[in-house]
Length: 500
Image (cartoon, rainbow, N blue to C red; front, side, top):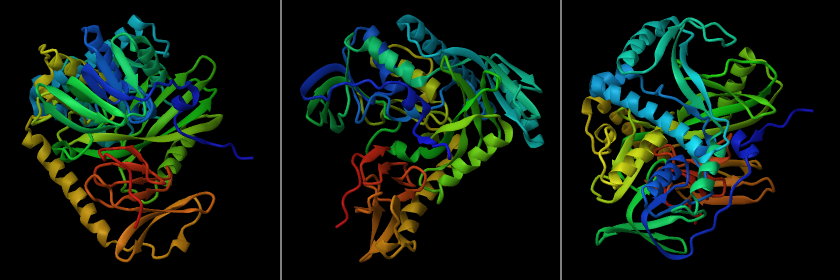
């Protein structure tokens, strides 16, 4: 009998979920935070410590977004190489980027200690390695820039993984934890202590008026002195949509009896792979991820899991594969996240473009946004400002990503689609052309056909069927929907509409 692999993350499957009420009526606060993930709750904790009254709302459940899908590498090793940051932002920019993430690690450690959060927080080394001769010189260059940026880094020829490497950079005093245990522990500590959390509460229209922000929500409204979008990407049509690009990344969690090195590991492959272990007190888990691709632009997403499984079985000893899941990251066009006041606004803030460094960026953002709201100086404000203009750093990726989005917007409307609903099997979705219109058609496990408009409500691109996740994904800006059209994540404000 084949072992069943469960969809969804290891964290979601093993950490009991919290429950918070839905907002009903009209409320007021010093700060409204939209998004109850790591960024939102960390900012809420810091603001509450400063004496602010904070309301946190989430469209779904606490931590149900990218926080539940992370592999929780807490590290100052960034997806954007430091030699590239130094080239684009100067040596001082590289130092600031490095220090901001080192500060973030210490902030997490401090919150774990202050609130007594039981989340298996562990200090470990982080290793960036290569199996290819072609990347050795690049890593030597990276090591030199990282040293000058102030990171505790050294070069290695061996890191203890069960396959040979050519060279590695090790950064000391990094960390890992169980992200949902941490998030729920943080929520338990701050809820009622200046922070009120609401779930299943979607934000609607937002406006600035009379020195305050007014937000309509399902069931009521919130008036606040400031609003933070801690939503991975802010909702609606915003200029930042053209500054970040959505990618899916895949993860498999396995039970193992073998002792692998305790640490965080990434390779220099394209796309790169990442590895960590996790011990829950009884069982050791091997967690391996990678095989990233642009959201909505991979015809067979099941192949990503298959490739990842082949990699695991080739190199590691495991008992069983238990869980698999994917998560979304937003890659910034100039290499660094966008954190600060929304361009054109006064009291509305957001944070996006974390790439694969969400654990540390969430803490960088929480501290930075707190300081901005409290009118306190922050050394990283200019570096991460959403209003920054770095044409030399961003122009190539900006043009490439936006030409790609435009091509999908136009080209997908001209694509040849299936023509009859009978071609759709149970638990399968396809785009069907009906009277010149494209329909996202899904036949559920019971044979019932669901017909939706294939037009993403965000910027009118055509969604694509995700074979592995059974979702509709937008290839332009990363909005995602369930098989029957409900919103999952991304910048769209609502789900897919029913087909006429």
